[in-house]
Length: 135
Image (tube, rainbow, N blue to C red; front, top):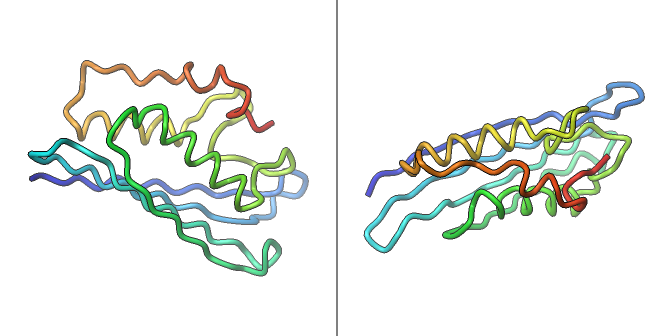
């Protein structure tokens, strides 16, 4: 069984004054095994003192199917739970052009780790659904 760990880091700031309100770290461990491949995800959100009293929260989950669609959904849900899904904050889910650079980069790395080079990461699939556009 071969494992790959993929790490991405995002800084979330208040747009009005560029003050950092939180940092998000996402670690994905891609596990290839006899029973099938899966991705174990660990998300840590570290709030700065100006937001939620500087608390740090962890969320862990694993996925076997349709990771290219479900991982962005899970990250967006975590942003909502952490009170970071607001138009006053920058977002790791999009930039000004409604692209998902950090998430797209992570999904591409997962695809490569799974050896699934023929599978296209369909960014348009989840961007077309308004629930993922936070601004």
